[in-house]
Length: 128
Image (tube, rainbow, N blue to C red; front, side, top):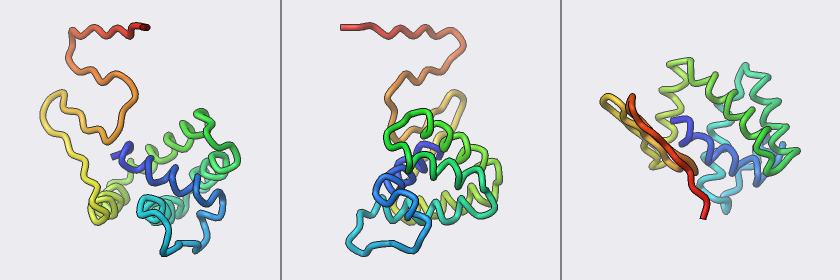
């Protein structure tokens, strides 16, 4: 679910910067951005570290370190089962679904690296 959350969150931050915390939801805006705003609105309640991470991402567009810090704050927030369920509901209502079941199952919305499961796997990244 973390991957499913990060796309809309970073899209909303990229579109609005720190104004993402306001009520700037634009009817003509992208659905992903609007979803990101709704998710951020719910995630930030009582989480000043997450809000600070959002500001850092807004102030440093494209900086992978700040995006990783935001991702870590979102991941911490998902430890709250009630919040995780609520966010899953928002994603589902927006047509985003993520699920995985069974030993070694992986659910990913987007990935730019290796996903490897199993106890005796070997991964090699080659250069062309």
